[in-house]
Length: 202
Image 1 (cartoon, helix red, strand yellow):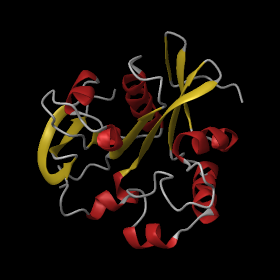
Image 2: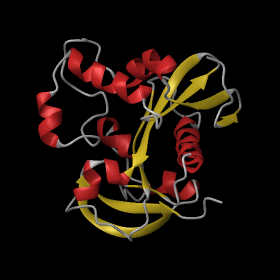
Image 3: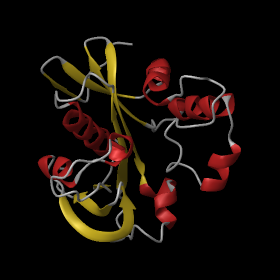
Image 4: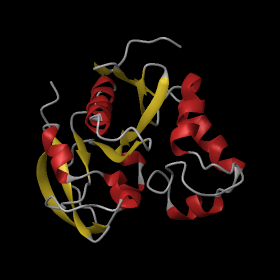
């Protein structure tokens, strides 16, 4: 399973979520109870109706199938051999965001979206979110993305509830070279969400 990482820093590496790494995807986004119908990072990947209908093991099977596709469903961060983070990244055209009435299209570019960043408890504070975002951008570039955008909260330095922090913060994206492209009508954890965009991917 040894592959060249997308990015590396201080013993941390980021790799695409290949099928060989599916157990690590499960660790990061799968529920503790395999029969549970939550999470698996599907709420913004597939239409709401499909998300409601997928239950239990079918959710795991769906995500496993995603890891078999040529374009992987996200990237994973590792500390040595231990998985410590996940970021979902995909072409916006393949996601419900393509039809969103709350998060507008900035332009007609076939942009990719990063909409979920997760770091394992006990591993926060090491810059893993920053490395995940960098790795997600690197993977999108590798797959031909002309631009990458995210939809974080504009919390202006205020604390964000950890259960809703998966969307990221405006500062996180700014630190990664993203610039605000538009306001949205969406909110998370009581904060407005904004579109952050990186066009300089060369």
